[in-house]
Image 1: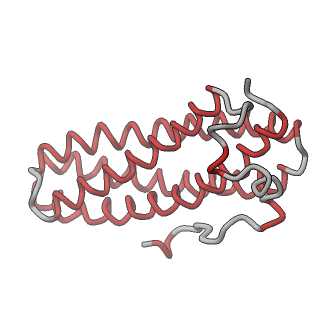
Image 2: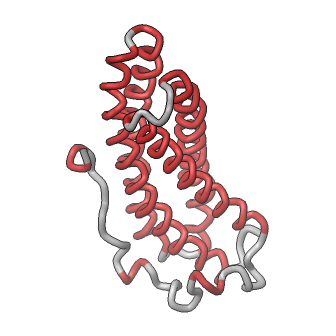
Length: 188
């Protein structure tokens, strides 16, 4: 399934991590420029990671017959809707507000910004496929439970893609943006 999507598997090039050495991840919390808005942004990233993992684990539970289909369908609807809706909103806000602010503060951000914006476009394709697959399984849960169970495999595969994608993308995004925020004392 990973071959179906264009997913960047490599780290950001070293030249795009220009401030990370000066502001390493383990020093962020203690930096005087690390404020509530940045904590909130990073908290949203943690929530995306947890919800994506929850969807994968729930789907594995269904496929292993450790979870009832009705329970799974309800959880898939709730967690899937949360993940997709919040990711779309979050990425839209980043693309139209947050990233332009970082770019204006430090034009060196622009090279990494192009990579991150392409990630957003690529993730949109994965999320659209996930939404179609999840909605199909949810509908089939009442119409044809056996087929719903069979088709949950596609949800499981796509949830693995989402997790891998978020792991790479969110880490790169954080390690590019937070050092700029700290360096320029933004987002106070």
